[in-house]
Amino acid sequence: MVVFDLIAFDADDTLWHNESLYKMGRDRFHKLLAKYQLQGAIDERLDETEDRNVRYYGYGVMSFVLSLIETAIELTGGQVSGNDIAELISLSKEMLIAEVRLFDGAEVEYRDGASVWVGGRRIKAVYGPQAPPPPPGAPGRPSCGP
Image (cartoon, rainbow, N blue to C red; front, side, top):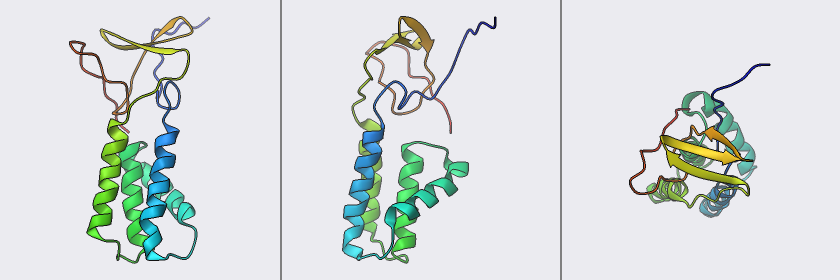
């Protein structure tokens, strides 16, 4: 039998709610683009852009928002305003600081970094910017790349 000392996984959507932020982001993107009276499927174009960009930016909020900006530029033929791009940047900041809501059964502990307890088992957490913030005095949050 193989015994593991550490299993690392991408914790968003595994230990805390995350998808609602992306749905909210897409809704705001649609509202922002409504004034441009675009023809065609916005979501399909955004999905194509995100798929293309994963190799450059990885996954997560920043990749998502860069894809929103790129899609807005493409769909409007470069006519998207600076104010609208600023709104998308603001969206990214809101998503990055949004409250983290853990799934039932998951609890976070901070000792020698961050650990997550699931079903009574301690799992070392490796996560990015949307992880629950450590309490005052706890060691800094670990980080991961794309």
